[in-house]
Amino acid sequence: MMRYFTLKLRKTNTFYCLLACPLLGFPLGSAFAQAPAPTQSYEVYQKSPVHELARKLITEVERPNTGAPFNTLKQDINAVFNSVPAVLKTVDALNALDAQKEQAFAGFLPKVSVTVGAGKTDQTQTTYRSDGNQNNRALTATQTLFDFGTTIGAYQAAGSRYTAGQHSMYNQRNDVLLKLLSSTLDVQRARKSYQFSVGYVDTRKDFLSRMKEKESLGATSKLDITRAETKVAEATDEMVSNAKQVDIASSTYRELFGKAPNFKESTYQLPFVDLKKLANPEDVIQNLRTYKELESVANAARSDYVAARGKLFGSLNLETNNSRNSNPPLTPTTVNTVQVVYRVDVFNGFAQTEKARELFSKQSESVFEKERLKRDLVKKLDNAKANFQAARDSLQARLNFLKGSQATDIATRELFFFGKASLTDVFKAQEDYFMAAQKLVNAEFDHKVAYFSLLALYEQLLEQFDLGS
Image (cartoon, rainbow, N blue to C red; front, side, top):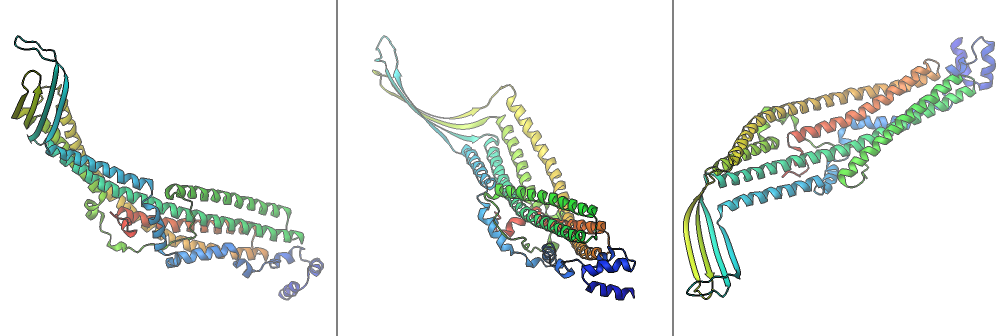
């Protein structure tokens, strides 16, 4: 009987519902509590913008090949990479090291100097008197024969510093590329989070309008309306916060790219790298540019010490001199000299000795620093692998969380309009749904950042963008 009455009641208009309920002993609001939403059905709510966004996000995560092609991202990065100030700075820094290397090589070459002078000389002797005019010209050439390793050490140190500069340039380019990628992903992350926050506000505004319709029919209280309005304000605050994150991400992007982010893609496909083939960290450390850079710095310190130690023993040089002196009325005199000269500083306050001792300490320090860096790189590679694996697992877990929260939100809303769920249940379902969407957005981009970071540490990132050197 009750089931039959309920079915019949849903087909009557509001006026007859108001009359029938008190006569049959039912509370006045029971008809509306059992009635479906006045103007929006289950199917319509399922097609709301926020649910469309969620379904699109789920598709992107489940089928990564639906994102924009990786080549699109690659072209955007390559178009600006070599114009980034941090990249341009590395080129000039390497040129300076090359100049230092050539400067050190000059120590192997002869030094030639020319001296020219003219002036007045007042000279009187018993046989003649000078007219005061005097001219001097001299040509001197010096070639180092042996300097106890000073020149060779200086040249090898400059060469090692240049090699370290090459590795440093690669590492800095690697870091710049990772920053460009992270900035791009942060813009996409912020935009997507903002879209969900807008949908969150729209959902709560729509629910508020449904509540007001119920109030106009006497099926809800003023307190429930106030609670719904408060939840709209809460969602609006979240939207404002996400809008700020979009501005911050865009500002960082503009700093790196030199222009505002004008791309429309919401996600990109990842380049394929067989992660199973990534070698054990212990096996690849010595081939990484970061380790090679420090190794070259250590070699430079060792060569600097050799050069400083050799300077303590002086040098053996071949010196030639051709000079011509004119002092009328005397006949001009020409002197040619060729000699082997040994030159050493006997005492200079022990400055050179202390310099050699300082460089020896730096050489020893660099050996320990290499071992420290090796252990640090092993830790970073292990952590990067663990971080990527955790990001991948989290992505799947949060995907399931969003699916469940979406279904719960839709069902709880309908149950509320049928009087089977409380208003608190509706708000809780909405909050869980929004939180699940935001978590999946973060997980999606955390996974991509972890992937690119792993490639960067294994020094395969630049190669994926054809930017390796």
